[in-house]
Length: 46
Figure 1 (cartoon, rainbow, N blue to C red):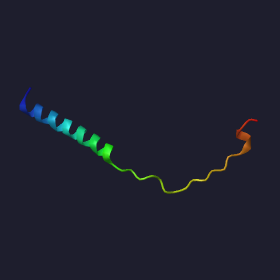
Figure 2 (figure 1 turned 90 degrees about the horizontal axis):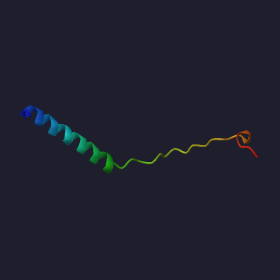
Figure 3 (figure 1 turned 90 degrees about the vertical axis):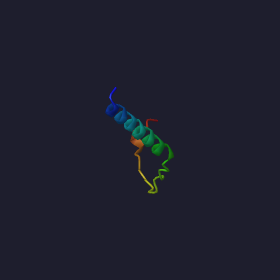
Figure 4 (figure 1 turned 60 degrees about the vertical axis):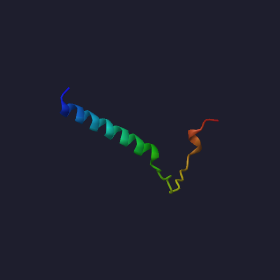
């Protein structure tokens, strides 16, 4: 393998690992807007 290929492969692995760590540690806020939806009784059989 050429030196350039090894460097590109190592950079790609670092980007993937860094992205995975970022997604695992990111504290995503919960939705703060309340949703109210009215369901008609016709949708539920008795």
